[in-house]
Length: 546
Image 1: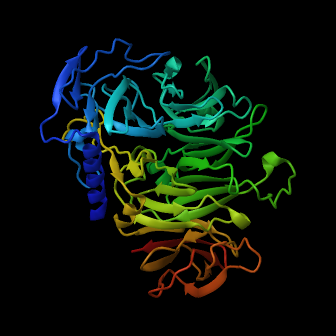
Image 2 (image 1 turned 30 degrees about the horizontal axis):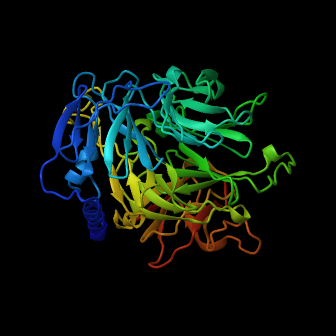
Image 3 (image 1 turned 90 degrees about the vertical axis):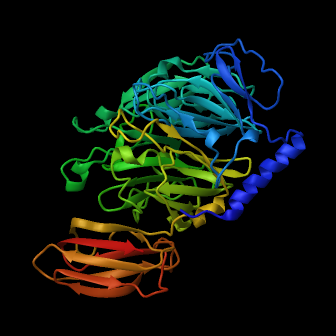
C-alpha cells in the first residue's frame, strides 16, 4: 500500500502543536506508576490517583481497567501508533483480538475488541481514547462483540454489551456478556425503550435499554432454514422502511461447487409477519439513512462476484403496485468485482462495513476494495459508486474522530494456535485522512455476471460495475453445444435504465462457439455493463479489470 507523506507530516505536526500548547513537551521517557494493581503511564511526575470503583459494572461509572497510555510520549509511523495497539493474552487459550466496533462519543473514541468465540481467551475489552490520544481500558470480557448504535431516544450509545449515557455512566446487559453480539438495530414497535441485538450464532434478542433485561425473539437458524451442517455467521442488522434486515455471511467450498448455501439476507416486517429470505448467499453488511431517499444498502458475495443489494424506500414496487408503505420499494441487485479471493471464506471477511466518514458520503469496504458511495437513490437507481483503492487490510470497523479517518484492524490472530508462527493476537488503529485511501492499491478486480449458469434467452444479466477501472476485458465461455450470440450493453449515465430516455446502449455483439474474449479499448468506460444472450444456454461471462 502507498501512503501520502503529507498524511504522516500532518499527524506529527498536530501532535507537536498539542504538546507545545499543553506546555508538556519534553524528551524524557514516560513514568510508569502502579495504582491498585494497575500500571499506568503518567504524563508528568504527579502521582496517579487511586480509583476504588468497580472494574466493570451494571450501574455507575466504569473504572480504568488496565494500562492508560498517553500518546504524548510515543511515536507514530504513517498513521499507526504502536502504543495504541490492543492485545489478547499470550497464555492459553489463544484465539483473536480484532477491533470490532469504533464509536465517537462524549469527545472520546470508544472501541471494543473481540475473541473468535466466547471464553476463547483473555485480554479483550472495552476501551476509550480521549482528546490527548490517551488509551484507557474500561472493562475486560471474554466474548465476541462488534456492534454499535446510538439509541437516540435516550441519548446513549450501545457498544458490545455496554450502554453509555451522556454523563459517561456505563451499564451492562449482563445476559449478553457471553453472547457473540454482532449488530444492534432499532426496535420497530417500541423504539423508545427497546433495541434488537443480533447474535452471530442465530438468536435475535429484544433488549430493554432502561431495565437492561433481554429476551430471545427468534432463532434465525430455524426461521431462515440454514442447513444443519452449515455454520451460521450473522454479521449485520438494520431497521428502516418498516423492516428489520439481517445478514449472515456463511460461505465455504459448498457454495463454490453449488452443493449448499448457508448465507442469508433476510427481512422481517414485525410481529405477526413471517421472515422473508432475499438471498441465499453470504451477506456481511446492511445499512441506510432515513433521509436522502431512504435507501438501504446490503453487501455480500457469491461464487461469481461481490453483490450490492439496494432498496429504495421512495420508489413504488412496479410489480406489486402496492399502496402499503411496508411494501413500497424494490430490492435491486448490482454486481461489483472482487479485489481478492482472500475474503471468500466466512471467517476471512470479518466485518466489511459501509460507514459515513464524511458528512452524507459513504465509504464502503467490500472484498478488499474501498468504494465511494452516495446515500442517494434518485430515479430508483444507484449511480453514485466508484472504486477508491484495493487493499489487503482487515478492517472490522472504521469511523471519523477529531478530523481523522480511523481504521480498526485485526492484524494477528492465532485462532487456537492454528497458525503456530503468529505469536500474540493483537490489532492496531490507523489514523489518516479520507483522501489518503486514494494512495492505497490501484483498483483492480474480477467477477462474473454468469458462472456456469443457465441463461435465459433475452434476459439481461445483473449490472456489473465498470467505472473507475483502467484496463478491462470480458471472457465468454459457452458450456452448451450450440453457438450463442451475446450483446454487451452499457449504462453511460449511471441510472441503469431507470430514468426515461436514459436506456442501456448496445456496445458490442459477439458470436461465441466455445470461448471468446473482448478487450475494451483504452479510455473506454461507462458506469455499468451487462450482457444479454440470444438463446437459452449454459454460460460463463467473466470480467477482469487491471
